[in-house]
Image (cartoon, rainbow over all chains, first blue to last red; front, side, top):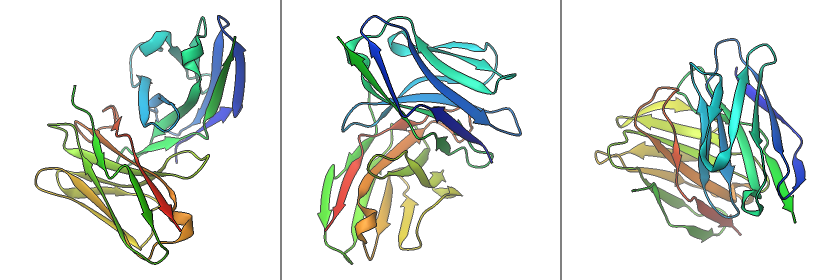
Length: 113
Length: 114
């Protein structure tokens, strides 16, 4: 089975600082990897995804992630945090059958002034 | 752009009652997924449909059933509700069933079982 592990359930950064949210995957076959963001009392919004091709993936709101097969990682980064980035972030991988998403436990990002 | 519509947005039920949640996918999306997110938890996959047929099944209790209709909307039927069923239920739609297809999530239905 495919799964993802998000390191750090809570991450706090200062406004303007680098955002780094960690995600490692486990898969016996090439995975499809996703990052979703969830604002309070809202649905999940796709930030970016990796399927094949270029390993550095750019998403919305200035986020990007790099697929590193050697490290089985797909960490999410943003050069400069904004107060509006405060939210819950989920890394996800698709399964072998049916392509339902397997989510990590989520990382809550806090941005302080 | 049109998004996934879920109704109702909030639902309060008593134990042992039934509930029906509805999902209207983005136009021309033929695949629907249902997820359950407990308080402070990550979303858990319940069930999915492609072209009106069940395509995959996750951790859906036997008390729950779902179907996709000819207009591609989907309904999740929940019976004999338990306190532990209190959660946010998301529907997601995608333009296909491939792993590369993005799943677009609705705003969710918050179910509270008293």
